Each structure stands twice: as structure tokens, then as C-alpha cells.
Length: 112
Image 1 (cartoon, rainbow, N blue to C red):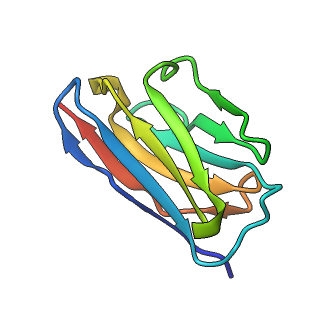
Image 2 (tube, rainbow, N blue to C red; image 1 turned 30 degrees about the vertical axis):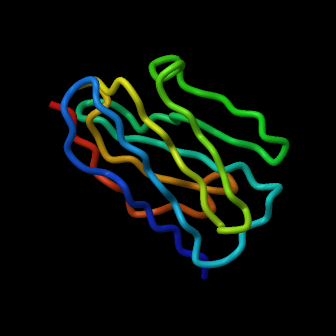
């Protein structure tokens, strides 16, 4: 049973940066898309970013130009570099793979 574990969340002032990591307990097919979602207060869960096998990426409009997703298949990991954070980025961030076949438990990001 593959488990995903997120880390890197925390509290930061507006304008600051955080880097989230997601590590899988086992290898996940490189064909699977790797995603980051977030659940922000009062809003539905949002797909923040996706990275695919070919390295292509997509981002929610709200984070374009500020966030960057990357992956390291050798480490069964993918990452979300978050810059220029705003209060609206506050929420719980989840990593996922293969659609929602695999999901982590989430890491809290608080921007003040």
C-alpha cells in the first residue's frame, strides 16, 4: 500500500517562501501525474499544480508565476516551491498521484 507523506508546511509571513515535499513509500509509475492540491478556508479543494512524465506542468491561475512544481522520480518525490506567499495561500496542502489513487494526509501552510 503506497503512502504519501508531505512535509515542509509551516507558518510564514506574507511575501515569504516555503517548499513542500511529498515522498512516496514505494515507487509510483512515472506515467502517473503528480499533483498538489490545497484546501483553503471556505473554499473547495483546489488543484494547485500538476507535473507529468514529460515534465510538462500546469498551475492554477491563482499561483502562476509564484509556485513551481518539480519531481525526482529516483527519490519517489515531488515538490512545490511556493514564493511570494499571500494570506490567500493559507490552507492544507495535499499531494496526490495517479489522479486521486494516492493521496497524502496534508501539511498546513499558514501565511500571516
